[in-house]
Each structure stands twice: as C-alpha cells, then as structure tokens.
Amino acid sequence: MTSQPFQDAMRDWLLRLEEGARALSQVGEPVVGCTSKEEIYREDKVVLYRYLATPGPDSRARMRTPLVICYALVNRPYMMDLQPDRSLIRGLLARGVDVYLIDWGYPDGADRYLEVKDYVLRYLPHCADAAAAHARSTAVNLLGVCQGGTLSLCFAAAHPKRVRNLITMVTPVDFRTPDNLLTKWSDGIDIDALVDTIGNVPGEMLNAVFLALMPYRLLSQKYIAILDGPRDRAALENFLRMEKWIFDSPDHPGEMYRQFMRWFVKENRLVEGDLEIAGRSIRLSDVKMPVLNIYAERDHLVPPAASRALARLVGTQDYTEYGFPGGHIGIYVSAAAQREVPGRIAGWLAAREPRGGRAAPRGARG
Image 1 (cartoon, one colour):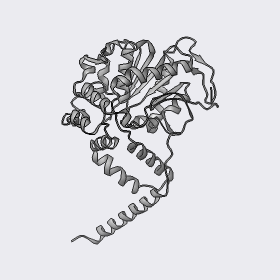
Image 2 (cartoon, helix red, strand yellow):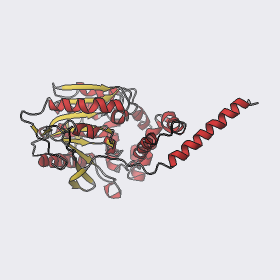
Image 3 (cartoon, rainbow, N blue to C red):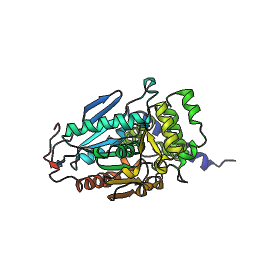
C-alpha cells in the first residue's frame, strides 16, 4: 500500500506541474530573430539577407570581406539570432564582421525536383556573388552550419576563387563514423521508396527522427524540468523560443534529400573522393583556402569524429580546429557560446583579412 507521505509528495509535485503549465500558457507567442536585416538578393524561395550593425560604443572597424552564412535546409536559420543575448550574429557584428545569411525558405511541391546541384552550383554561387557585389569585395568568407557546412565544402571545392576563408560549424564530413546515430538510422531506410512515395520529405518526419535519437532528454526530461522549475518569465520565454525553432522544420525537397542521403550519408562520397555534381568532380583536396573547423565535443547529431575527419581531407596548410565544450544546439545559444564562439570566428577572420581590409563602421544602414 502506498504511504501517505508519498501520496502527499506526488500531489504537491502534480500541483507544481499544473502551476508551471499555467504560467507557460500565459507567456504568449515567442518572438525570434532580434537583429535588423535587409534583403539583398532573392531567387525562387531563397533569400539573402544582410544584417545591420547598430552604431554605438561597441562599433568597430568593419572587415571588408563579407561573411556569408549557409545554414542547413532542415531547420530555420534564426537559431543564429534567436534573441539579443543568444545571437551568434550579434556577436559577430559587434566584432566588425559584415554578416550575410542565406534563408532557404519553406520548400513546397514546386521544389520537389530540386537537386544538390541547384544548391551547390546555383543558389550558393548566386548568393555569394550578390554578397560580394553588395560589399564591393572580390570574394566572400563562408560559414557553413551543419548540413549547410557540407554544401559549403562542395561549393568551396568547386569555386575556390570565390571563397577567401571557409568556416565549418558542426559539419558532418565522414558520415560513416561508428558513433553516427543518424547514419545508423538511415541504414534501415529505403530512401528511394520514401521519396518516390511522398515526394518532399516532411519536416515533421525529420524532426521526429532527431528527437528520437535522445528520447528521454528531448521528449520528457526538458518538459518536466520547465514545468517543475522556477516561474521566471524570461526563462519561460527562452524555453518557448527554443521549442518554436525545434518544431519549425521546413520540408526537404525530395530529389535533394534522395541525393544527399545516398551520396553523402550512405555512400560517404566526400571521404571516398568520388563525388560528382552535374558532371563536376568535387574533391576536398581542392579546398585550399584557410579553413576553421568548429565542432561540438558533446554533439549527438554530428559526432566530433565526423567533423574532425576534414583535417586529413582538405588541401590547405592553413587548417584550424576548435572543439566547443557543448552540444549541437548549445554551440549557438549557450552563455559559454556567446563568450567564446563569435570571438574565435572574428579573430580568425581578422588575422586573414587582406591588408587594408578594414573600413570604418557604416552604421545601422551602411
């Protein structure tokens, strides 16, 4: 028979959860993205934005070479600018980096037959050229994030003169490392049958897969923690912003998904050296510009070994690694990330900026 103290404790705990749910419901719709930006270029559903630095005591001389951020297709890029005190983009702007970002949009049925070549040989070059022209630069610095980093490596190998410096962040390179959970999941999936049946792969399906890789932590523990935790409004707003981002997952163009999963994940062509895109050979040995490879030491989606494989494959002698002591999401939004990551990136870029490569701050609208 259950003891009375246990029953009392359970009742008190359930009441706290109920109070937590009530407090959470009163917060309202979370606002994401905090930094002003302007549209520079648009093609189909793809938009290139430039972020606008706010003039003030932290304004610094601006690097002339623009930094273009290429995010993954499977999530929304506002993770890079989630809120004022959790914004990699704000941290870069404050350190003089001229930041541009590619927003892939929300693919629909019209995008069903987009392929890897459309992203690597069309959208990415066009966005890079638009950013370079807008910044009056002859090349761009490129920051590829997760899947966007894989695409950025392909672009840099195919168009090395367009990329002055390359940064990869939590980027999968070797998809066949023993600890790669996503690869183990995909080995049991008939990718052709999936795409042939449903066309575009729903974002909800991909999101369910990511959450299932750590079900207790991502599906139970965090909800209990927020409901049973303090009723601080700021903490509740932070939680809801993260939830909004997690479940704001665009659909993945069907043919792009088929090719990416087959060429990169199942056949590991980046590592094997036999990747071709639209008849063009893509070899990481052709990546000869300086490379900064940033990985997360506790990443459950892109294990460190999957990223660090890049060191032995690129053709540059100027290769730097930085292991962030956190996870796949914490590398963008944790307090430690705000202190460490923007400074690492900006300092690395500044050391490689051409002579005379800094200009006076342009202010809010340049």
